[in-house]
Length: 406
Image (tube, rainbow, N blue to C red):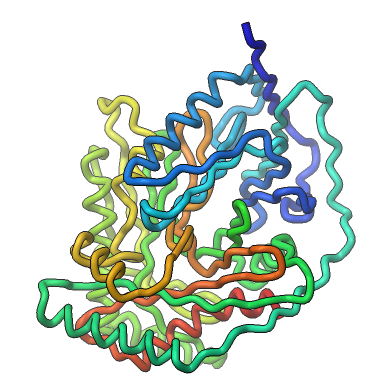
């Protein structure tokens, strides 16, 4: 009989800065405002793809849990063994699952460490040498800009003539460096400049998303929906006026309503009650402002075996990253987008042994591959969209990753 693998979780006396703990060995992270989870080392990892990737991920995670002997004196979400997940946007692309060897968490006044194996509790080191910023040279292609604007025009034409309400189109830019790109320096810069976002790193995909796709905790479901964007000027008075115009914009409100409705419709079958605010609020980030709505629901106690994987399967892809109706939007994306999104715009975050978790949509992010990085931006296209303005909006959405790689 195969012996079980010890997994130990215990409290930490000190509240250590999570991102400062990360070594360069497979850093994983999900951190917002100094709270969250970081991990390193790889106990186990796998990939899943295809239309059943969420169910396949659950099956693999449950099989891994069966091999563990867990000692957890802390309890609560994110304690014990944790799976970091980075799912692809399309079922045709590869999703990555990682169980780190060491995980450190912080929530409120509680900090803890989890480690896999029979070794003594790992010694933590938060006093690492400063990480040099990576200087990246970006590819510039006017022809690709023109091609993307042409795709926006095609999308608007289809919306007029083909029963499509909204479609989200993405574009990418590739940058190269003289040395290997380190996710840790990107994470620390993004955390400092965009403190209200969720900073993430899983298998080379690193970024700072403002959009929480799913938080499942003690039978409560939460999703923060963003759709509708305007760039900031840096002038406070001017930006307040722009925020007011965004909140009144019929084009942006229409785009936002599609995204909110798609999330509410997806979680409703699992809930006894749902709260959808009548009007969005304006979320201010360092470079842009978004229309935002927090949708919440109470999970029905009569539904057995509903976990984060179950809800993700229904939530993804939401109208915020795909469109409405979903099938028609996805078909148009496949036809005209001309890039593989990979894990961009897919769910990213963590899931614990109870099936609870916190996952965002992988936005404002890039995929690192050695000395190169591919960053992404997407825009929601509706009947009132203008190709020139959408291109400018996409450039604004590139700014967080570009500035983290100066």
